[in-house]
Length: 74
Image (cartoon, rainbow, N blue to C red; front, side, top):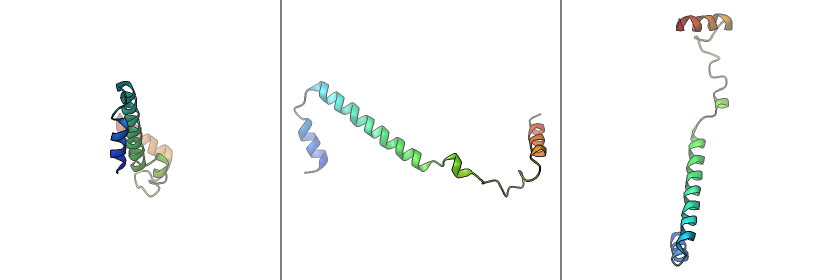
């Protein structure tokens, strides 16, 4: 007997309020599982550290780079 079949057999004679609570808990677990999957596929900000050390755009004096970026928005 599969887990799904065991679960179905167990809940068949439960009262409606208990089934509603069980459904709420199952939806919570599904959301928790989906959240965990989405976090595992996203890069963390710390993983991007050092990604621009060889960039020509950001090479040179930081103050000159800041000025150039500010001037670009003017």
